[in-house]
Length: 383
Image (cartoon, rainbow, N blue to C red; front, top):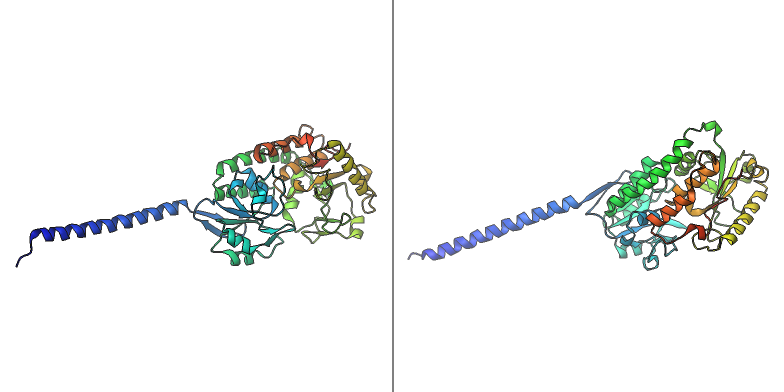
């Protein structure tokens, strides 16, 4: 018996419909994969590793205070879900207390892996330190589940710094804001280096930069030859590092060695926590801050390792807030340092105005620096 033609037609139509559905599904999947591929971002990090993200990171974790400023000033702070432990200012970093800490306060590379895994950010961003040897352990522990990107966040040299901020803008989808900041940064940097680069190396003042000791206020530490970013920082300011040949990155200085050095200028890095009411944004009495700074400065000048130096004899001893070199505020620190070393050449440079624009325009913080604590003292060179 012959089948009715309608059955064959129905079967044919079903087959055609199923085929079309499969083709549409396949095409849709291919289009979706193509769109996802377009969104992917590949970054070459500071170690030369290629790291691929599915798209701009909506959830960012990071460690080290240089990245705190970096993320804030390019407009990515509201994407942070895990942070460094060294921030404590609600004006600069709104809502920071609600964001989990992922590292130790005195060691940004001592990571809390359990916290990071629980947060599960789209990317973990870390600084590249020349002295640090544990990067491979971090990568092996977290990748591929959590991509890790290392960036050179401390070096002020434009060829390095510009690339770092541009990559950070790309990672977070804030490229336009990153470019806006770089225009500001390069304008200040180029103004300074256009003059300091003309100074003969033999004529550059020899600067001893006293860092922050972790054990006591009497500890003397400094940056040595293994801290390349700091050498570049001083070079941009037109200075020579007294400790440039010491085989250290950052560490204790032998007092006998120090007594033998020719020191033209002493710059002392001061920690707000050690000198409350003197340095930082939270201090509010400028007169009290100046009195405290003068007391600190006098004590430094009376130390036996410094008292017979040309720096002390000529009054070229200056105090530096600790945020002025190892965060992105180093552009402000560079302005202060250049003005101390070359007051005539930079008579029209106003470091506090540079700082105020940085804080107001990019960090979006409601601070009037003329009514806060100190960041550099004396603000003008002693002549």
